[in-house]
Amino acid sequence: MNNVNIYKETLYKSSVAFAYHEAFYDDNGNMIDYRFLDINEAFTLATGLTREQVIGKLFVKEVALDKNEARKWVKIYTPVVVNREEKLIEAYNSELKASFITQAFSPHDHHFVTIFNNTNNEYKMEKIATYFLDHAGKKIDYQLLTKTGLEFSGADYAIFNLFDEKNNAFIIKALIGIKQKLPKIIEMIGRNLIGTIHERSDFYSQEMNESNIVEFDDLSQIVGVKINKTILEKVQKVFNIGKTVIAEIRRGDKIYGNLTLVFNKDNSFQHSTYFNIYLKQLGVFIDKCQLEHNLSLKDLEAQNLAIRMKKDILTNAYNRNAITTLLTDRIIAANSAKIKCYFILLDIDNFKSVNDKYGHQIGDKVLQLFVDRINAEIRKNDMLIRYGGDEFVLYLENIQDDEEAESFIHRLFKLLVVPYIVSSKEFPLPLNIELSLSAGVSRFPLNSKNVKELIRKADFMMYEVKKSGKNNFAFFPIDKKI
Image (cartoon, rainbow, N blue to C red):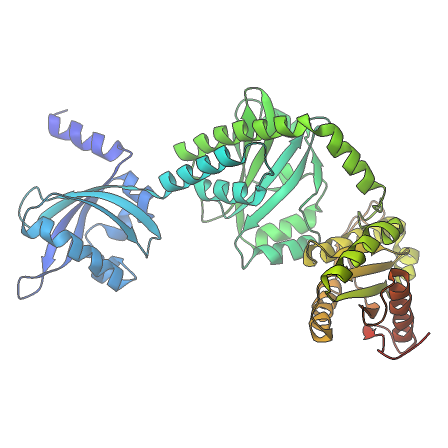
């Protein structure tokens, strides 16, 4: 092999992007475009443009979609060709949505070479490294960590699973993906996945034994029994889902969690150096955060115990004990701040018929999904309390007027009447359970300043709705007494 071939092969295998161009001129001798004569693989990784898309083609006329952006780069490279200047350029390409540091030079007349790096990953790595330094021991932003993993890997969807060593299980802390599709996927699955716990199976342990990054052809291989397989297969088909990658977050032999990365069939995993560095840094960061967490574990356990005493075991909504404690405290604070609040008493119409027809196992699953949907809509200071078997008190804090409350209730009703897809041992095929709701609404401080009185008035209006035909809601009148 001669020297020219050695250099050429080295260039093709280089991690630095390379392109060789021929300048193209108008009748007046002005450079108006350039043709691609050669590129290497790193060029495709940096830009997303393949050899088939660019070789022999004019950049402005045939390759670029944003012609104005393309002409900007022609203008940048013109002095390189015309004056034979060597230039170091740092600029952003709005069509590729990436920043590049480019070295450009002209080896001979009417031709020029560009050697460049996409600097987006460097910027992301610098940003996340700063976050790790500033937030060690503080509350972890799982959404940010998941988004960064998605960006480094090139995935379409990403899930952050935190490992609970004591119970040998994972808990889903964050889920992000294509904004237009993710809500539809969650709706099809029929439950809010955040907070879902799934065991670390023997199959998972075996697959992850030799490597911390493993690709799977089928999402159902790793999901387990939490999601019905028939529903999962439908999701994969409808949303064109291909491979799934599990990237385990470790420090030494200790597992802290994983990133589950889901790719559409026309996309593939970018197993880059940056992604591997990110995984290692993530392990160190979570290790430090958990160490800080363990130092105050006793205090946290005491707080959690107090919260559990006020939580409903089945649905994880607050139980009736919260009415005389947490909810009363909220109203006292609201009164001091002079803000308006609304109490909604929600009742599922004819829910007994669901239990009678399908059994309590199906009924319990529907209630859990019902609460998941409400919790996904309400804000941090709002509260959902399980008041009875299928009755719930929803407290909305800082609502300006009836119009705002009515808008929220309409939106909530629309969400809650979407069929619930559930199954059980007795009914293994997915069932579509349809519900309707009746609700009464009272206002703080307009209808009362007393929590029990506000609930009583909301309850009164809920039964008025029941008597008049169900599947609706009504506000307690301002001047009515009961």
